[in-house]
Length: 372
Ligand code: G3I
Image 1 (cartoon, rainbow, N blue to C red):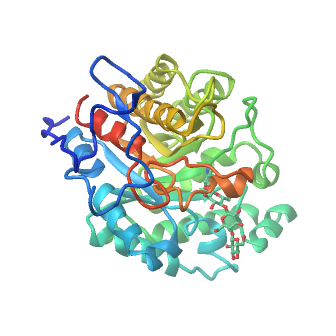
Image 2: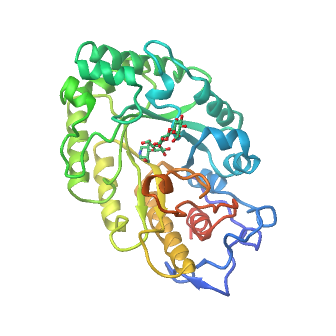
Image 3: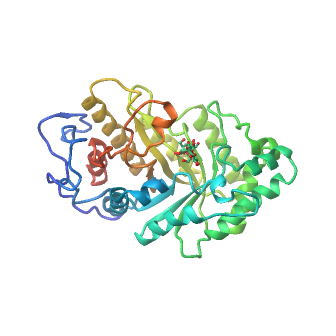
């Protein structure tokens, strides 16, 4: 880690002490809840950023990016470039987008995001090569038929990683090669790929990726395996087996879709212990998709925002101490979050509100990055 740069805690930086304060984490640290949705974005543009503070701590700070607002909303572009040093395509690097019909790759939407990232000195987290969702119909048919399933999946991986080879112009920090292959009870998930290819597909796809781009950093990515527990044990056991077999897997992505309220996020000791045992396998650990749901908690709006800030701070602080090298949010503004569409309920799970103003969570995150 490089030395910390001082952070100016001015009104513009947004960490005001006084008025309405809740969510004390350590003595002297509190997350203001008075400044929230009504804040004017320009008036309160922070004088530092998650990105600058992350650079000083040696940790990438990333966001999942959606194509439409990147084109349509200047505020979206402005905050993305200012606050983040890494970008994950929220959808457009998934197989249904990259290979809509067999043999016809379409990198246009993904490349538009990549172009924005490279123009702003950001890196890319590739997401995702092998998953049970968002596959094109033709690929699902091939997998279901069992014939040529292996060749089709291999061709997809080869095609994508050839386009995004690390010796090319695009700096790809990591690839989520396999996404969500383990169930919540710790079993191998019954997916189109497990059915077509058997459990050995997990090792195969990492090998195919490595053959295409030996410089690519290859990750296994999953949700609900952040703290200790059945699923985390199973993910650890899977990775230990792959490492022991010499399979080229280099890291683990902990998605971190969590919430406020009891048992909605991992405890600090559990998270630290899990990261430590994964790192002990020689793996790098990234947080890949963090958001913190409000709908899982109770209390006033201000109390819930303060609790959310605390959850973000606890997890980021634990991850920095435990040696996590990249920390990505699944979006950054509540205007564009997958959660309401998924749960059917409004939420506010991200560090910027729908007016693009930084929330208490944002201030808590900058405070942690600044060494608070
Ligand atoms: O592309 C179609 C578009 O043509 C159509 O008009 C529109 C109408 O609903 O749907 C569009 O597809 C949507 C797609 O996102 C692209 O916007 C799907 O309905 C929607 O279900 C899909 O949701 C994505 C979800 O993955 C799919 O499972 C979310 O945006 C995305 O945030 C989410 O991301 C996943 C990670 O990849 C893996 N980990 C969990 C995470 C959250 O679920």
